[in-house]
Image 1 (tube, rainbow, N blue to C red):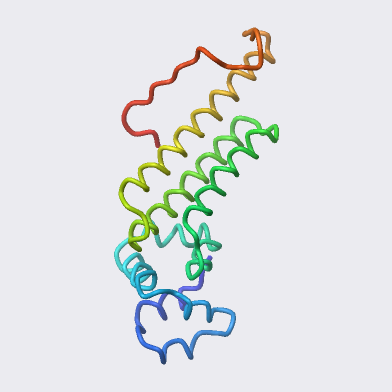
Image 2 (cartoon, helix red, strand yellow):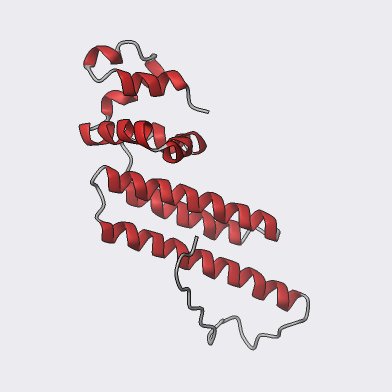
Length: 170
């Protein structure tokens, strides 16, 4: 968990003297642009859910000064690729997908609130995640059916399967 004192310092103090009270290991706050600092302040004051996500993903919080949104978003998608090839059971795979959904949602929210992404970019990344999650879940279940002898595939290609997602995919 992140320190409540750090949050309090960010919210209550909005001037250079406040940084003197922050321990040296947290001086990264100086590197925040004003839009990112204001975004953190707004989130802490108005969004308990996103504030809790900072605690769940402290690496994102502590990299805000130098964070490149697209790289973090792609790393999140890549984490799904790696986990889908690691022989997880269904419950583990579900947990990975849920965690990475929350992570990408936090990244997209911050990029949007900071004004670094347009609504189109937010939608695109959420769509990329949704597609990867559907592919991963589908591949898992097809592989399981093949393993149990319930399904036979003619080749490694999975052509011919069409999945239409309507509405909320989360």
